[in-house]
Length: 151
Image 1 (cartoon, rainbow, N blue to C red):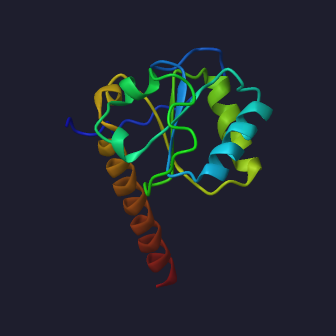
Image 2: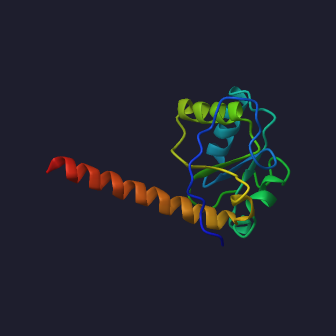
């Protein structure tokens, strides 16, 4: 797999569409949480954005291929995977509505990602591993900062 993209690009608040087919890829959600996610998205005005549930059989698929699947693919199925939401093809406004609605909905904290031209060809497994590495690096950096401040 290619080296992970490391350049952060802030998201604006426009109707500009981000990369990829329009979908939200959901990993590590129970059936009840999948239903809560769908209800939250509907309440946030995202009724036309489909959700594709990631399963163990999806792990070798690319983000582009997953985003192109029909809305509701694997709904009601679960897998012991990291909790993550990968947004593809949303407008900047939809992305903000998704994140704001999610935070207000009280669902368990996920790893967040958006499909980019680079990551579109990554497998979902590769992305999940990279997101977990990033989360751990951030945790270690926070702990190191706390230790420096307490000295």
